[in-house]
Image (tube, rainbow, N blue to C red; front, side, top):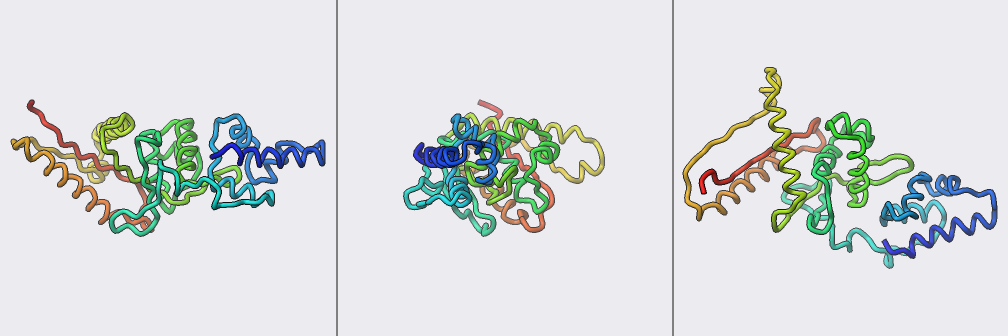
Length: 253
């Protein structure tokens, strides 16, 4: 967001500081509804000021807010809100993966946030998805910038919850995502209990084809995944996150 919005906030802090020399940044952060650490990261350039947060700060501090002149996510070429297929709730965020750098686990956390039982808590997400806490923290920051989550006071709450990617070419982030999901599938395969076997489906087949049919096969795979998600992704009754890996590649050159 433009530096002038940060300047507006800083000017308000200085105005209050001049009026009351004992007025601290900690008190300013409390008055604005955020943490002192959040403002420290903003002014040091380690965090980006989002439109939603700027609007919330202006409201708390009784500052003028002109949404027509502000930079919004809706005008950001990196992201846009849209509906995909038959989904009606929650709203999807379509991301230009070439412009907005995501981590592979951001997609997992975004899907997790759709569950009615979701807790926007770093420790809970870390334990649930077996991720490092520092990875969850960095993911929360990116998902907040996208509008998937929103920052409230000392924590986060879910806002939308689904990322839709349509990369036009192979990207490092997408490849890293698939590598890790294949790794997780291998770990699931090591679970030998009867319950684990019932909860998973891992299968495969080798078959001879014509190379000219590769694009047709890819399209069938895409349609199958979309149909599966359409049929079973019911946000109001969901209680867990599943992953489907569908690999189609040539074994002979």
